[in-house]
Image 1 (cartoon, rainbow, N blue to C red):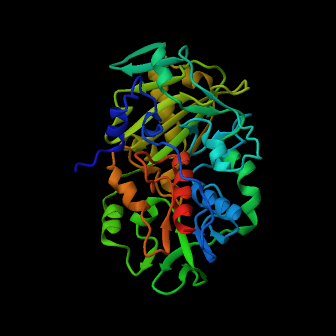
Image 2: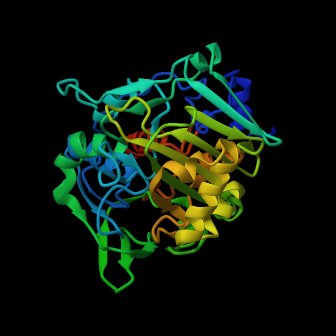
Image 3: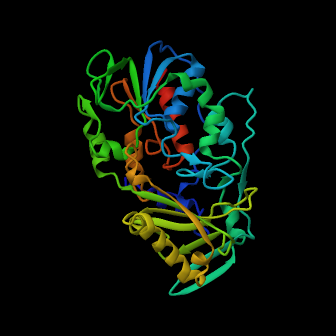
Length: 399
């Protein structure tokens, strides 16, 4: 049976209309309802490696179930690849994951507690939003039109994915997080699973949930004893993982459309798109975002400092007749290739679905995997996928 790629699957679902930077992280057609998470016979302890979306979602569910756990995070804080900052504008700027790609119902599903009212506000896009396309030296701008209604993508208003987790998930698990704990080896050969730091410190439990980015495994930064199954080793080695960068520019006026795309905005090698990062926010700040992954990210990633700023401004000046440099205020850059505990953006949209599904498979009833690239659906590389993978891992672990 031929395995289709994620981008081919979504095309089959007929969800492609106008091209958006996040079009290939939409909800899979066959997502359906989920099996409830019910406590089983498991009474042991669990280690969770990584405090990103999947790690925190896993911990939160185990907390609800009364299972003893500990989170080991290599970085000095939680958040993984959905960090945000409040220092650049008067609204949160997401440095990583930015959009909700599925129904708002996903938010209470993550909270998993009907007694908790989720007040997070999101806003979808409108048919009257402007869509720009630059080709052969000509900029064409028009309204997005009815095709935008095929997309469920929404912006967080006055908050971010990070803020959502910070408000609803972190409070109950914060005291179980151990930071600056860089796990470099995992031994699951005995009755217990032993995770070892680079300084020799060891932690043991009955089971372990690994939630580190797939790129970390591909680079061999965690050793396993015994080695992972051959099919999982092949999936890791052959995984097409896109690097990624986000750049935000603040201007004194808004001279750009809601979205700006190019001939290479959506290819098998990567993506790039400019977008109104202040969309829907209660703000007077004019912030234009640049999202680029894969090959399309490389021209921006290969530059630093003033050279990088000037490259982006020049690109925009050519399109908007010098308006970018004329109204420029400041720039913010997040190059995910340089983040030591991520080293890339995410599993490529064009990767075969088998990669993600193989990565989701547990090993020896001791080692479990959760994360945006370890899913059991035909979609990956978004926060909601990471949270769903955590639910899948917990269901299997507690049986």
